Length: 388
Image (cartoon, rainbow, N blue to C red; front, side, top):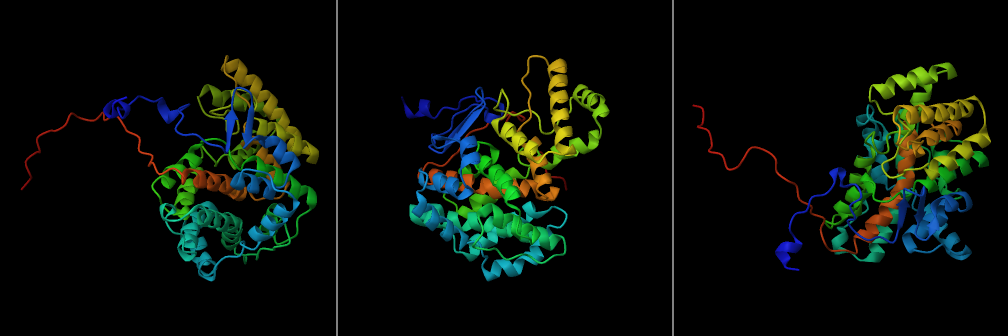
């Protein structure tokens, strides 16, 4: 094919929906089946049967670790949790500056500072081993940064990380200052594993676009965090729980939902751009919530059933079910996480998936450079006379 023809602009669907932009060995989402996987393994099976460190190793190395590899990897990553002095000393100022926006906004600045302090170099200029080392440093530090920023924002002192706790247990410990109960650790760990990666979502694609420029790893992650902060992407877990609060009681479910659907409003926690059946993450998290039990879980199950019935009535022919955010919010609430930390907790998991995608994209030297169709006034136009 001639070069001009090969590079000719082509129309793509709005939002690039369904457009394949590259090949990946990291996983896939099969929306019609309600299935997604990391590498060659079911993500849900990994979440229910393995540790976070197991899956982190899998995403970075392409295989699950044996016992010796897991022990070494766990020790190595735990040792990276402490922050450089320059970053730690700057956190109070970052927390004050981001007081109105929260820890996720502060994380963007803190990650930039971490990358500069740690000497992250452009990915284009370094080899695979150094790229992986930078990724491990960033992934291990993100929970420490997020919990420290949250605690500083609440007028509390940050909690230093512990190397004897798992990734999930240490995260909860740094957040609360108390060693968490095992069943809460396992619930949060299952959630974290289930959200490590999920296809070419907006934040993952953003990370890969920045990676394609050869920028350093911190720059790639900062861009991904910015994309995640949007309410239509990672910002929904607390909003889904806010919906339950707004409905309040079972008798208010139908009128509350009906009114908003008829007004064309989105019901947070329902619907997904890829899944056309039940989101497997939601199904798994509902099971975890039901193990806790209690009024909140019972009410959430009631709301789910009625919302799906009303959506089927008011939007016939469309498959709309709960997505991961709906029961994620319930599980995190039951585990004692403050709502302002719901999306940051999502980020504490997704940073591993972003980093795996960054490492994969860095092997490709081609910059991602799409085109746009200009639809403004015809050009060139004569310049108007300068006003004197």
